[in-house]
Length: 175
Image 1 (spheres, one colour):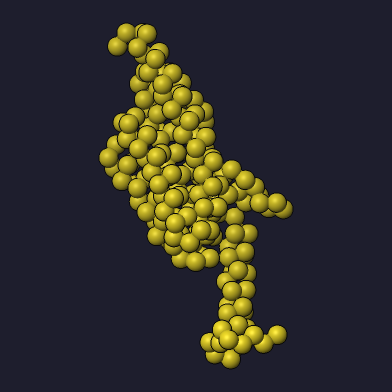
Image 2 (cartoon, rainbow, N blue to C red):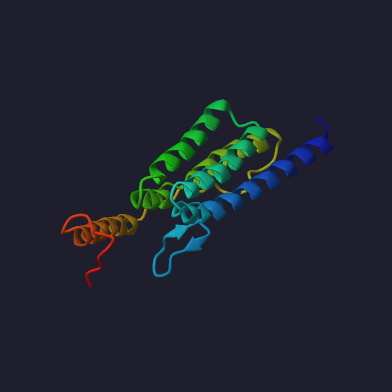
C-alpha cells in the first residue's frame, strides 16, 4: 500500500472511531442525573416508552454494529455486539426493571469498546498510534441498585394500595 492510501486509511479509521464514540455517548452517556454520578443516554430515555422505545433503541444501536461490519470487525465480535443489543432489548421489555437494566448494561458502550480495539489493531498494522487510551466499561453504581429496589417497593405499595379491595370499578371513584 502506498503512503497516500495508507494515510487515507488511517484518517478514515480515526474519523469512524470518533463518529462511533460520539454516537455511543449519545445513546448511553449523554446526560448526568442531577445529584448522582449516573449517566443515561437516549437509549435509556427511549426505553421508558413501552415496547416501541426499546425497539427504537435497538434500531439505533444496530447502526453501530452495521458500521463495525463495514470496517471489518470479525463475525464473532459482530455476534457479541448483536447479543449485547438483544439482551438489552429483551430485558428492556420488562417494566421498571428493564429501564434500570438499560441504564446499567450500556450495550452501545460495550460495542464501541470492541470497535475501538479492532480499530487500534488496524492502526497498529498501518504503523500508526492508537487514537486514545482504551476506556474501561464503567462499573454499575451501587446507587442504581438502591434506586431499583426503592422503585420496585414503591410500585408494590402503589399496586397494593390501588387494589386492596379487589379490582377497581371504573364507575365509582372513592376519594
